[in-house]
Length: 354
Ligand SMILES: NC(=O)c1ccc[n+]([C@@H]2O[C@H](COP(=O)([O-])OP(=O)(O)OC[C@H]3O[C@@H](n4cnc5c(N)ncnc54)[C@H](O)[C@@H]3O)[C@@H](O)[C@H]2O)c1
Image (cartoon, rainbow, N blue to C red):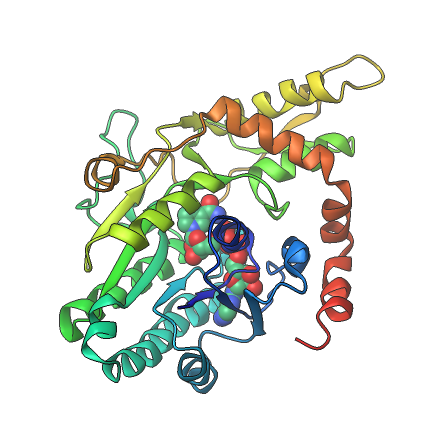
């Protein structure tokens, strides 16, 4: 038995692989293109571990995906691979269309052809799990109820539009061809190994470097935050017990405005790594022009996954953010390699034969 995971050199995928192999021995084939967001240094602890097979490649490379499926015969494919940064999607949407839409389509086609040839029992047991985002549902008003699985799709950025399209392709593949798919739509993740272009790690590394802490607009954009390991446990649960064709919203019931997140990070750093001059890190907060089309509020109603699959997050926001800040304080080398770009050289030297 084995599973194929795409995009598992990225933030969530890598956390998923580390947790997966920490709790069971089923091998993982990790197919990742290694874009700027792919960082094999995150998986350094798995070097020499036969349960992790890394393959550098594109989910849109049909020949490669078909070969991997034929060779390793996975019982499930988990699709984490994506272009994931909203700001980048505004500046340069093309990559998002290629990977998130065309890539997902080609992946589905290769998986469908493989699945069609399986024996009856393996066909029934097979799963294609697609990892998606709450951003496909659009933006909520302050008093609107949180997103449920039947909320209308109203994506507002090139990123969320491309993820919405991929969700539709996954759905159609089930409806039309019967492929046993599962989709998870999760809120904002945070935790270890998060690329420091995203809000929480950016604030931690900038604060420590004495740099400004840039906050968009009034900082009152509300997001629902989930510790990444809780997202990973939700995906494991959906893979194990989710009903094919179903969508599960995953969230932490932790709605917070961005400015509160930044102030919390500053307060934790004040406690754990106080500045020599005695001032708070929050004096480094600066306001920058809001990004175009910035969604105001996302909130996930996670009752379905709680009710049907008995999943609950383990971390509160207070415990998760403390662990996250502590992780960044304890791993300055990982951060420095990302910032200098040395993580790419690391991949060359450590995985030259992969
Ligand atoms: N980060 C979040 O808060 C969040 C929340 C909900 C859902 N998601 C979804 O979870 C998934 C993982 O997000 P993340 O934050 O880990 O992203 P990430 O940007 O950190 O990682 C993405 C990974 O995919 C790889 N990749 C990109 N294009 C590829 C391609 N064409 N073929 C193969 N690999 C490719 C990259 O090299 C990278 O390793 C994405 O689908 C994202 O939409 C993320």
